[in-house]
Length: 413
Image (cartoon, rainbow, N blue to C red; front, side, top):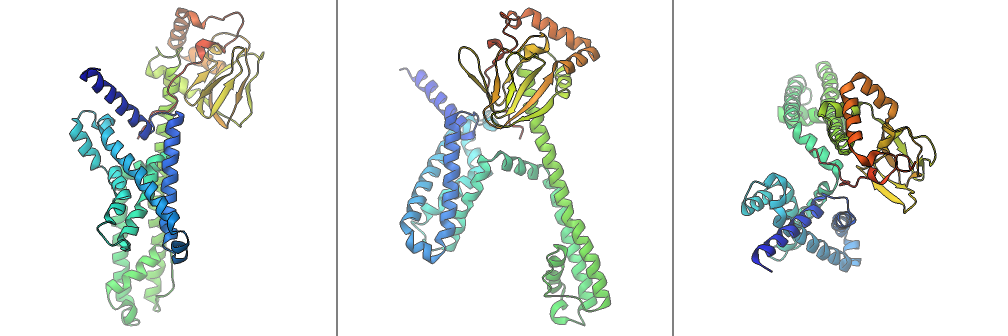
């Protein structure tokens, strides 16, 4: 094997490892690796919590040690592989291998990965009963964000809205400052031990604005009670602001992800590949959602074909004469029904809870009437492709329609 071939093979291996670790595919190995790492995170964090109890620490000491060694070993290998694969990460693709690895090691996610294993190695040079090491071990919990799309979306939302959240924090700090100062002025003579200074009054202000209301410090003067009432109302308003900011931004983030996924599915259909962006957008506006519980018969053999289906999540099985075919997230079936009035040639059943996007032939017909260019484009594409012709009365579920593609939707973060 030549040096060039060895380098090519090493690069292919690096790309493969990167795809597995970053979840770039929906294959079984990726799911197994991510599932094992999540289990190790949960086990190691749980062992740290239980180890703090003297009874558990004594009775299960050997189990806790075994979990720690296995977890640290796995996390160390993971960290080393992520550093090695950093040049394959898209944000670092324009950098040299050294610069890409350095940039990755300075990223927030890599720092969390490093802190997840650092306490174990520090225990060899620092007394193992040091409380700070326990805290550092608990930082492994944040590794879960790497394997959870929902948590990644939430972190992306927080990052995108950081300016608005920082502005809210400034307003909240101002509210605490002014309400505590006002309460100091109103109550310092009646309760000098409670409101003798503005810093003393800040505890009451924080507790009141956050609507916790411990009741350990309360105003006794009329002016103090009026200020307290205003502070309570201010607290409700202040707490509602970040909730509204994050909820709206999170909904927009989910909508963007769904839009990208849906666009990718529609644009991947051979019938629609040559259409421009505006035409695909119009087709997307005609889609309707449909949920199919596990075992539901989605398409029945022999019935009239009237729709095509995009699989947003889940998996279906097509009972073809040769052998059953399974389709998963991001795939589609039934597009010939949009042009050919035929009967279904096979049953299609959901084998797990499945969410579908349905495009009815009637909706596409109305779309082509509103936009004749779209209709002409689709007809020209269909006429130029032999595989779209009906094959012996098979209907619309034919081999040409079972399009294999990457089942993982693109990441919009």
